[in-house]
Image (tube, rainbow, N blue to C red; front, side):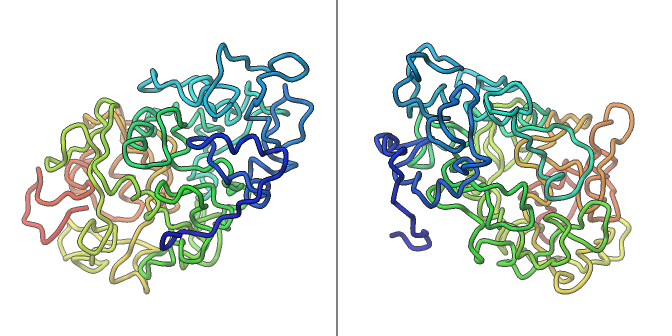
Length: 419
């Protein structure tokens, strides 16, 4: 067993033996063990997968996703496929001819259930809100399902995810599902109904796909001594995730380690305009993120000035809860303190066609628009969630302040990175 890898349960129930023939992608050997799979959100016998056209099987049964014989009682259950799909799924994993959204349900196998209405799940679709709502308490629903999130104007491009995961991670194959780069469907638990308990995590690191990430005590944001979660929406006394009083990071998954499995690299992107503005980044790529003590200011790098700024109006101050011990001298943010992982609103204006998945609500602040041409999202208002000053104009923050930005495109001199 590799260092840092978790022990896996290998026993499989009789009705799942057929899945052991399939070796990669949506389905992996040993992942449908009696313990892990039946304890997952998909394998639960009450709230698990339950395709309405497969009425002869109980909820959570493998047959709701996998058609080992392609027929039940002599007929193929809906949705019917013209040919066999990899991993014995009832539909192909991903339509890789679609290089950009908007997406339709048939483009991604997961969308057949993770759609609020019109899918194959018994009793209707599956409701999934954005991270800022489920964990941050924001009250305005942009969308109510995963398909809707990926159809927002700023979204994780599934074609890019599939290509990058195939190039970097051995478990991921050409016919795998892009969602599987971040989620193991046989292990993922129901986190949205248990937002303050990361033991119910839905994610698996691409470099350790056969284990849930976040369920261990050493896989929480409390691993960073300088982390404090943002305020819950509508409160200055409770915190994310879920409006809890405890704010040491022990109830928040270490999303930094998770996201950096991919974003430690320059990630190629096909969505026009999404590539980084950093002149040191390869054209057509996102900047490789360094969250260590030698990297970004919002990572573990030491603060240049204290929370009161430098005494210049340009610098401003840092606001609560980042202006008090133990994070006053420095703080580390979680990636999801600022970003919504599936999709979010667009930054209008400023010449940028993407908001880089920036959240609409941050640290008890609703991010408003800036006026004509920028009604959906205002960069300065986003930064005002934690800072008190903007000297770049309403939509000028990201011109200078981006990952690994330092003395690029902006007046200086600076002591270190400007973001």
